[in-house]
Length: 583
Image 1 (tube, helix red, strand yellow):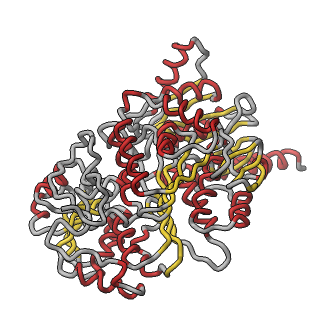
Image 2 (tube, helix red, strand yellow):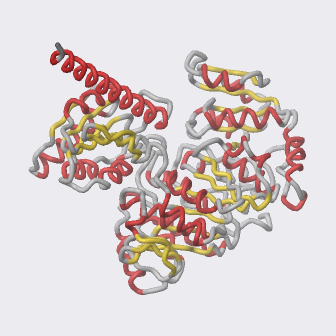
């Protein structure tokens, strides 16, 4: 018999759900836990954050297994150890590779299994927690599901505990691109005078490490990836899902990404749309009318003017048939209606009468001007869209227009996203290491008008089985010299060459090297005055680095060292010249 809190639709999975490789044999319950464990406390049982101790009591003595010893796994280990649980942590990497992570564990009383995930870890296991890099399609997770062991991760657990302790309001932001910038902007816009905002999830320090510092009415802003949202599924997750999510949610866009992890575009989109299943009735949902998939979600509501409706119809036709998304989107629209989610649109291409939009050269929010486009410091059209999204999201969560305006005019960007590392000798070095997909790299390329500078592009990393044709077209239009590096360097160069041959276009200069340091050295030799050297890889960093941050930091160091060597060489030549003229 369904829970009184459960929608009439079967929430155990999207009814049409494509095969994702996850065995869904567990009972679909949202009112309690599908195992003999005390459920997470409900909000009505508590009145202060000190009651987190009661949540800890429910976990004392339970066996918790954590897969992955990265940032999220470490936060999970610290949390469950503080609750008195019996914690085991497993990672496929060796102890030599994980020296920094093992040092971070310190003297926490955890059982370690490194180099493999032995199935014996599941014996007596009450809860299996996954770090973002661990796919739920793995054989180990399938065995856990077969044993009716529920799953969780740090973001889901943080939202559940925040709900239980009446913290927040909670804001969650997902999308294929723009998440980090939009999340950071939203946090800044919500942080008015004397107001503390807690930003976490897929960005910064995991919120689970900081929950005990969150006070009531302090906003919580989470960036959520598809990896994290995969587990926002009542058929798999520990504890209740519906009603536990954010009061303000945003889906910025859904375009091909992480198809090396998700078995299909439909499975990837389903993970993103899991956000809807966690949102309480009457919550606000911010959607992008410029993206065909998210625009189709707004089709569940009457349009406010004919031009927007026509534009949405055109967008809806742009969704490729081979993605097979329409059954999923129909279910998502039905869920939006049942939950009575309040849709707030944003668009940088359409003039609206409600939401956030660009009107001529002015950013607008619900009919009131935010600022002029020329007053924005961020580079690129994609960042105008990010600003509009953040304005709509933060305003829905309680931000005032004056703070939104100030942030829009002063925010200079996030690290590793079109970050100017140095300007010297007529060359500008830009770090866009966060561009881990072709789409993100395209946004970076479009920030530089064709023909206004010599653009040297450093592209490479590890591919995610994504399409590169549009990237190749943009490269042909804007790039003067292309340097491929890393695992996918030669593949990217070949994609650009093939596009040039197909379109009978000239091929820019190109080279393929193995490592980023070689790419930087070659770029320095090739770059004339009025050049931009852009690291916008288009691939992930996992062929050579732990994450895109580490890759970006390495690029910074390489550029800094290069310029130091150049300055020393110039000083030495100047000294030699002075000596030659003395006496």
